[in-house]
Image (cartoon, rainbow, N blue to C red):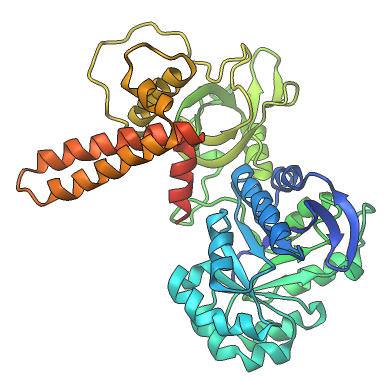
Length: 444
């Protein structure tokens, strides 16, 4: 049985989110914020449908899709306006976890084998309108597609029986509820649908127009054993009773909190059983405040929320490590981390963390750009402009090739270092950060 995911849809049209495929009324003027709100409210992934009608609108939509992918940490599925393999590439390079081929278009069907081999089967899903389309293309889908978004809600169960490929059900606007909760009969239909073994997700307006439905559906799926929030890599759940508390009377356990992107230690706090369960249930870091004697939702007053990405327990089961997405500052003083006061630091040769070294060099380069220093080679490059920087970058690339033909590996090391420096000057000139580069690499 595949774990079910709740995947609200965002329909992009003229730089805004409209209500649905058939309804162009404005749903949100800020699609990026909408995506983030979906994530905060418990969405497992986001389905984006680009409904642009021209190439220029499509380019703007891709910029929005990239901004959405940068803003959320859950998977983003991109679809719409695919005419050639290059369009699949653009969606994936924008940050989408998967890109869709529309199987109502013969030209998209013909692209399947090519894009699957080029980008990997796991990066491709197909939108299929009917059982006829599914059965006619079953062999192609089985070999080259990792998932199907099935568009005919009334036939989803039949589609699940017709294939072993994971199926996402799109629940259309005529079956959706709008800000009035979800009647029990509608909820029962969704739960029944989720009992199909290879149904992998629910998308559409039933969880898009009213975000409270995400938690409602998720909790009902949990009751039926169809949804699992967090498990360890072995699949064994760690319960509160498995953890060793500071003392039986306090019933508390310390939690070390790290930034999930760069492992920066942000803070330390405590959890009791209620805070522990609340954190796992909602994905929002919740602690027990010893000074106030009550639960403390991080960010409730400041807006500096922490969203749980992963949690570990140490070898003695007496300390938790939470890796989070931090909004704003972790410390009540306004500092990013609570550990900003230096007591002792031994002077050592730094370089254990490659990204730290890159960031330190980049900081110097950016400082030279903002605060020019007489005699600085970096300022010389900035003063000469982009063409000079590009010329030097090309020269250094050639030097790497020449050095690589020589037996001394140190020469290659020196030339690569020169190349990286000039590349960072280019990055600073174009306003590109190392974080953006590493995030892009992680998507490949």
